[in-house]
Length: 242
Image 1 (cartoon, rainbow, N blue to C red):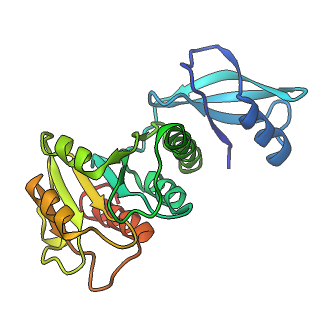
Image 2 (image 1 turned 90 degrees about the vertical axis):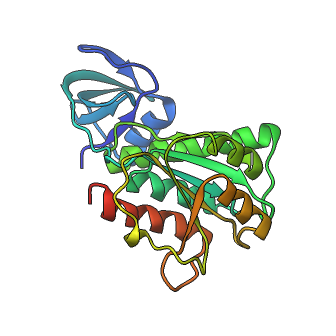
């Protein structure tokens, strides 16, 4: 496969750009690229560029050769609202959700969330997740980077969500609704997934008041890191581009 690299600046016809140090190191030391090799560059604005690589010591320059307006974004605009899980499970959620076609990820802190993040520590973690999203786009062929929003407390998020347009679902084991019974939506969708211990009853009631419809993902209880990507995959099969 031709390697793909994200450039955090606008790309223009005929330009020669220098890849970021991390990307250059990966290309030179792991992928073992050489002078004249081909790569794909994208800047997140849509489309991608075929480029010729030219190593220069530890640096790696790329000459932009040809623009390709290829897109692989699904027609379904889907936001995954993930209650913070323990450990590094959020890394997995972000990576897989981006590969599956999510448009946006909103981390929230629920009452049963084991991990607690605030201030500089929260900012560092969100930046880490954004880098995972970029890497997932490089791997999966996406040319637009899904947004990873700053962490919000669940009540704060529900107050915002209640004022937004679109269809809203919350994963709730034992709920009576199934995705297969929902008509194909013509508006953006938000999917709310709880932490390891699930949502407290008061949180479920608050989500219902904010316009969230409870759905179940089959007869089995899924882990928090499985529920989100699993539901995204099902939605892409039902209403997206699968």
